[in-house]
Image (cartoon, rainbow, N blue to C red; front, side, top):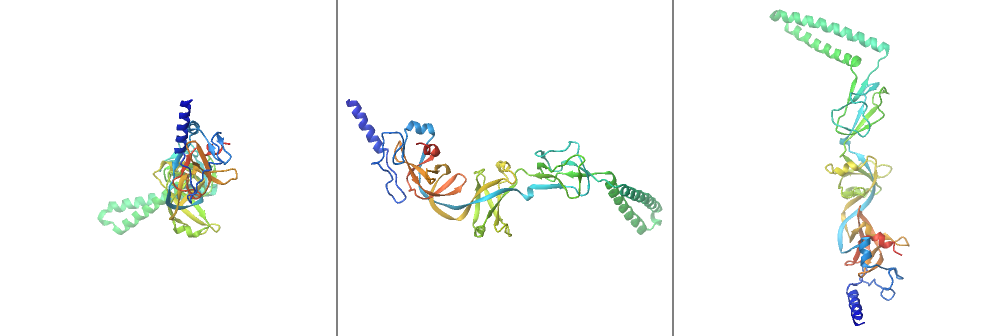
Length: 370
């Protein structure tokens, strides 16, 4: 009996030492020891939760002491991923004709291509009249070439007796006729090759064997895998000169640099451009036209308490709260006001005082205890 009494006294002393309590932003005491019940586990009448240390470890509950600090003010913008103009190339036909595949066949969307790679051909198909007309022109040009070659040879054989000016004129005429022959032969015999201008991922715009295409039709598109930029819209035009860097919700560790804004409004809103790091492999994980949330930093600062985004949850009244650890096994909810400053961080602006021990991990599990 005496041993049990000593154990109880030691436990009570330890519990008092481990219970520093919690305070609000103005130093007020947040614990309510008169209404709190420490005999039952789980949710208490005052809204607090009592949880044994073993259960805390099982649920992965982690806490941290918080301090007030100045951080860059940020805004949240709706953004979309765009292909960088330098990393996007269109492959179009320069004349009417039918598409023909190369030796590797018709390439499908998603295949990697390198700059200079042959993607296919467009063969111009003449009407019977056009074919006869071009063939006649080609024969006439070839006949003139043969005649001019004979005249050039005759003058060269005369050596010093031949007029130098006449020889130069004939050589110039010969060069022009050879170029005309090549152009006519190109139209009659050789198809137009389609070449990849850059290295990247191929997008096939319905290029099929035998498809008739008109001049200017886009058959393929090549997009560099590491060249993207983010386009965001805002109705606050005063922000265009205050932005510096930003991050996105999809890949928080990816840094964005503010490059400027469009001088033309889009549906009454300003268009902002953020460039992604081309050396980061995570850039290729972003898909063109993919919507995302942009957290852009401003030049001015705000004072508050920085916490992981998962530290803030909502109570039954749908109000944002954080959980404060007031003792070794007791947690107390506290209503707060906050701002999202990045994809994985929030800034508590009201409702929480510095030096409190706040639950930073496992908050959602703690909040579900009834």
